[in-house]
Length: 509
Length: 98
Image (cartoon, rainbow over all chains, first blue to last red; front, side, top):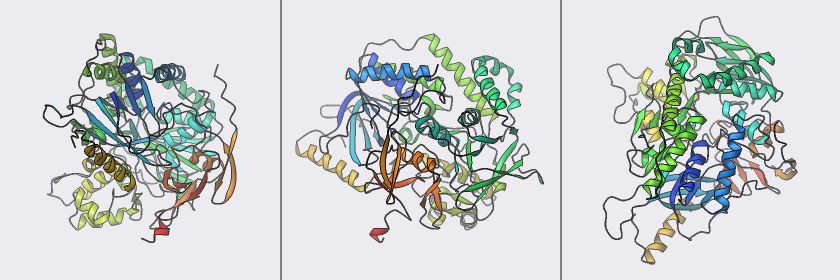
């Protein structure tokens, strides 16, 4: 039952779509960028992994009524204008498209040399085809995913990302389980726990590994972010109403079960996140909703040549973007969490700025974003940086693991196997992967990359500099194909190129 | 006032040969979870069960075969009337004997 009028999948061999602007991702940033560019007179193609626009933050389904969403009225307004531009033919929405590469325009100018980007995607999760979009400007708004830490038992069914539990609720009105523990670090845990409690789950505890009272040590930043306070207070009040205990400086250090989650071990942490001996206790739970902050999804940007910068702990990356959200590649823009974690309000603003700037890049007359937007963007970025500072992930968590703890879920690599490889001298990304295979599976190291990097760095033989030719975290964001691509899709892409060559179409590839 | 959600009819799907009636518009992963199955894929090395991981198409732990297409992310894909879903064991390509 399609609930959003997306474009049907293209016919093979039809050739690429052409539009002024291609937007990758239809979350808060991508939708805002698409609407802003369409308003400026551009033709816009939006490629998104989801079935409906909204992204993970505003994930929805036919059963959604906004009860479990934040900013639902704002989303409906944005969705209405997005849909209006779609109906008018200014926005084409390609749902279920997994973009695997963005080719920047080829170097050089002259007749027959294209100045356009090519966005390549696997079209359709159910029946896969190839889709390409050529555009003069590209906005990458691919968002972020949750950071996970490997702990004993974390692969048990019932252990899921905090966002996964929330997505079940927002998108499908399904409560993940009966007795839930919400754990990790960061302000996101609060709405997840509040939503689950409101939906009828028994939330046994919210387990926060940091000490959020350290917000108070940064009163200036806190004062600048006063708009966020009622939101946080609202979640805390809801948790109190449902009698949900909030444990700070604690973590879920192990999960237990027999084919499915039955209980978790919670322990107190010292400031470096080492276990406080004797503090372990067991809580029954059939769901552990866990997340240690977010990792920007920047593979497409890095591979297209955009400059990235390392996050605070050096294990994650975000895109460098200028005042107009343009990356170091002219015509390639980054908006939302790809430029650093800052939340949905900031993502919408960055999307608006990027959409207008992309339209200007295409030659449309549009004024750049005004000073009010720029000031608000700066304030929200400071707030994002504050959250980053009070929710770090220090490497003490590596002491929670045992030798048989799975580190890489896809390739089922245990800690013992990884450490044995490092002991053999495989202490750079390439050798560690070749010897022990972490990060070589379906997810391509997105889930384990930052964790493996921390483990390898902590265990490498002394005297060897960290990094080598390529460190593990970097290897996650540096890959020619950002999504798994079936061979038949590659064949389709090759066939399309051959057809165009035969037809005499100049091809810059 | 929250808006009223649209009434959701059910759709009929088949999961490993069993008939399931599930709300239209729910993801395949949500259908498994709602029916009390948190895990449905068996891994290729240890044959351990996996279910919903990231919930947003990044971790590939929730893969199922839908109408013959292997490796479909259950967290991203909504159920459709008449879907034939089979759970995956190992690589999901066992029949190729590679």
